[in-house]
Image (cartoon, rainbow, N blue to C red; front, side, top):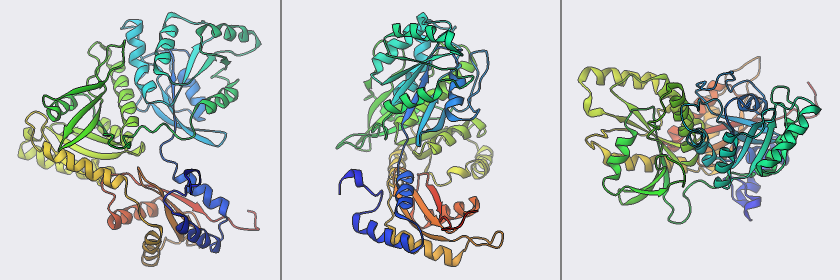
Amino acid sequence: MNDQHDHGALGDAEYAEFMELAAEEGFDAEEIEGAIEEAGHGPLPVLAVVGRPNVGKSTLVNRIIGRREAVVEDKPGVTRDRVTYEAEWAGRRFKVVDTGGWEQDVLGIDASVAAQAEFAIEAADACLFVVDATVGATDTDEAVVKLLRRSGKPVVLAANKVDGQSGEADAAMLWSLGLGEPFPVSSLHGRGTGDLLDEVLKVLPDAPEQRFGNAVGGPRRIALIGRPNVGKSSLLNKVAGEDRVVVNELAGTTRDPVDELIELGGVTWKFVDTAGIRKKVHLQEGADYYASLRTAAAVEKAEVAVILIDTTDTISVQDQRIITMAVESGRAVVIAYNKWDELDEERRYYLEREIETEMQQVSWAPRVNVSAKTGRHMEKLVPAIETALAGWETRVPTGRLNAFLGEIVAAHPHPIRGGKQPRILFGTQAGTKPPRFVLFASGFLEAGYRRFIERRLREEFGFEGTPIHISVRVREKRGRKK
């Protein structure tokens, strides 16, 4: 059977047996197909929303995602913790990267536009370029156009702030940018956004570009992430030694190298470098936002996120956000506790308590205690990365999974709620990278019970170093309407 009839983790014979089991429990084939396809989809395609400050990017992002999450303020330079959101239109899901609101006036036009847009464009499958139709195309807009052309990514042009017929002519003037048809929209009032999103779906792939190094002999991709000054650059220099090789530098921009091939433990790895925030950025808000954007772009391109924690400092909210970003993006995770050689006994004691309380969400991730300065325990980094990748790619055969689920249901049934006791009927692993499971149940499974299932899956099958996604499909009642 070819790829277009792929059944996630199931082979043909296993799939037939699985469908028979599903039919016996009252699920129809379409329901099953949909659940497996949705759960096994893998990473979503990425749309970068780019343009100069104050053209309404964040308002448009809120309109696209259908909720007010992106921060909207009149002044540029607004700091945000998250820059990536999930959206759905016409039954298709995709990620939106918002590059709005970063203060650019401290730099020249070319440098500032590159600073806010290039990393998002790099990680995207398509771009939505937002221009203020009431102002028309500015020099900054022209600079963005050059960046977009150089990227080779498909682009949809949104002419924003068109609130009525009178603005249509302003929108038409933007044909001059040479990016094709400008779509007149009002992100504030929602006018024209449906047509715009229809066009976005035409240029977004159903599945994202293969960003992972899975080609024969292709190096695996690692993102070094962490808050500023945790030692990312030092670590990269230490693992690279004298053989640091720059393999990808975008011509015409003044930025640090991005991808570097480094040999470790006899294997060549591709490090997606998130170190080195531009020294020219004097505005702290802008620097923080820029770091967040760069981290999000690097994680999107990587298979493994090595998260650096500065052990000499208290584990911070910013550390937690970076961890959440890596976990939510579905990447394999390794935690590297840096500056270990600088700890005294007292700090080490309190650090272990912090790890117990603050790092619970990634208690499954391999841990290495390192020193980027001295090179302490650097040899442990590669085995940890390999362990995380192995967990990320682990598959559990459907027969074995269902035997395991049967044992759980018998030994630890779901609590009775409202006189009913929901039960897991059967399940399958719909995909890997990260492992994605779909469970079919007779009723709603509470979050606590899902967490219990995840813990037991880890105990039984390993999954070290990888997030696990569990989705639940509840059997619909036949012939009865609520």
